[in-house]
Length: 490
Image (cartoon, rainbow, N blue to C red; front, side, top):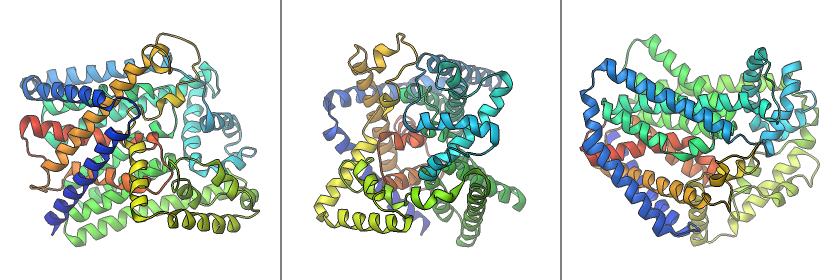
């Protein structure tokens, strides 16, 4: 039964992902054949490396391999720090508001005057707490939050550590799945070549700072699979739930990985063990969430204005139910046109029903496809939005600012690279239909599919998929290794 379920998953997701890939090509606003051609050239280069060059790394002694791999990761981190410094931007939108709210949090441990913002945008409170804790630490060295270069540098450093830590965990997972130096090296090359990690290095927002948490859940489940004492397995489940909760507090979409982990338990383990383990995961997560909400109510925020300011969760589903599925000022104004939260819930619920009732089945399919092409079809992942307000000019801005000579080459590189990753991912999904052996990469696939389905209903834009790009890289790695080595996956 488990093998049948895995086979159905791979077949269904391969068809869906193939459809998304084709629509990414058709709907990209620039020269899609050129981007595809570039992606195919990149794919060929990656295949050749995996087939003929990287296998030589398996001959290295453990000592030499450890020295080489750690040195490369160190220099990649230094490179990210350098680029974060050069690309440093003046924070904008919600990022700006969060930074402005941190001084009072550092002074009082709560938000006495900025509480209204965190009632409206409660999803950003976890990010504010994470940054508040980090800036509390950096204040020991004389660095506090601010919109100038000195004020953003500590945040950029934290962001770089999150991205570098993500690269390290991708490599660890590659080692666990493929058990070879060549796979680890290829995983790092795919990560290092992914330009949005560099472009987002100065943007210490929820999209990047949530990157490590999904991988921590996946690493935890990979370790859980090995068995061990009940105490060890229980601690792993608690750690996975805690990682999922922390990621959820910073970026809500991370909770998709928790749901995928529960599904994965049923794909890999006997029903009784899967049921008990899944229940433990969910229970710990709910306990942490309940405590988090209680602390918000009792200390962090003054909720006396909740009825006049709070927005219903369904508003974000309403944003995602028309046009491009992005933020809608019209929907926001509609919600705020009434005085109480209860009235807002009823008004938005009615609007949401009206929006979906207006679709024919074919129209709804077209709308969902359009949204998916926006979410998964932008190689820049909306990074240009955050890179348009530089702290100071330097050579990098000849690439990252629209209209400059290097901008379109960067666009084509990023788009070609994304198409390459998506092609390798499609090769992995198709290649796994027949063996259908659930494993770590299956969990990555279930997580990505979960986000595809979630963002088909929720408000969406390309950067909302950014914190799941490590999973795309791992799935692409699976495809590249399968094509180059015909290696069975663990």
